Amino acid sequence: MANDAVAGNALRLAPAGPAEGDDPVRAVLAAYTRDLVTAVDETLADFLTTEVDALTRIDAAMGGFAATARDCVLAGGKRVRPTFAYWGWRGAAGGDEPLSPVLPALAALELLHTFALVHDDVMDASATRRGRPTAHVALAAQHAAAGHRGDSGRFGEAVAVLVGDLCMVWADRLMSYATVAPARLLDVRRCYDQMRVETVAGQYLDVLGESDAGNWSLDRALRVARYKTASYTVQRPLLFGARLAGVPADDPLVTAYTRYGLAVGEAFQLRDDLLGVYGDPAATGKPAGDDLRTGKPTALLMLARQLATPAQRRRLERAVGPGAGGVGPGPGAGAGAGAGADDREIAGLADLVAATGAVDRIEQMITARVAEALAALETTSIDRTARFALIGLATAATRRQA
Image (tube, rainbow, N blue to C red; front, side, top):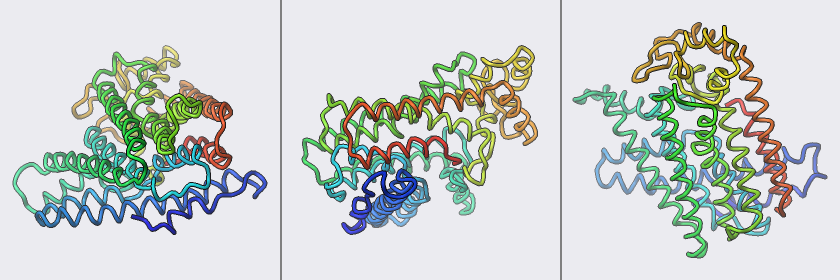
């Protein structure tokens, strides 16, 4: 685990409040995020070293498999979920409580996130993640390079599923290292389990939407955003942190965190919808227009259909069919551009979506949700530094470029 000195930095660097610096929110975020991410990364690295060594002793091939899983965890990322969980805990516990006892539980959320990402990439047939080949693509390439028998793509997908499963088990194991009272840890686990159930539910709806896009709607697209993203990215991590601090379920802070978390989490996914079409691949690590290629019925595309003029709607339906998105049949889907759509087709469809006013409406929805989140923070007593951090995170998470 990360040593106490490193873990403690995330507490010792607390600014006193708005009097310090021209932008106290930015100062809080910069100091805390840097040191919290360092503490989480060191915790993960130490834990994973032990786990990989144990699996290597079973068989050398197992060591390579475990190392692949480890590399997926440590390959980068903003550590968003541990960050929200930290501030959920800090908002209730205040600035005097040591971080070390709860740090393993915070870091465990990043293992859960890796499980979700690896499985999501298989389901979406994504080729890149964070600017690198996705796990199943890299594993398929290793299989082909080794000259093994069988279909390399199928091998890559099968092993990637196991990589995700291993990360889920590792998350459970690392969480058990948190040194909090057993009854409290059981309460934390209940929150964690609900987060996992909601993540699976949201992922299922996401998969269903791509296969039944003609019957999809804006309401269902927002439901996917709520359960696939808002729940396990912001809302449940905040509540997870509150449980680590011993906050009971009927406390007003839980209500405030729930309101804030749903609002920021949905705004986070709406920003993802925009980045999936208009983002810079150098920043996002994924090709622009992926959602258009696959025909994913995001809130952006549902809004475009609603707001389109008759002429625009006819153009959309010629390009994407009566469902969601794409430029002709994609692999395994009734709609979606597929890998064969060239950049000009995707760019033209992106321009058409913007021309309907859907992009502006999504931006308005993001702004409204951030305002709702900030209003929620005013309804309860919360540690002052945590309040400033959550204000800043609401903006940072929804204005990001990656």
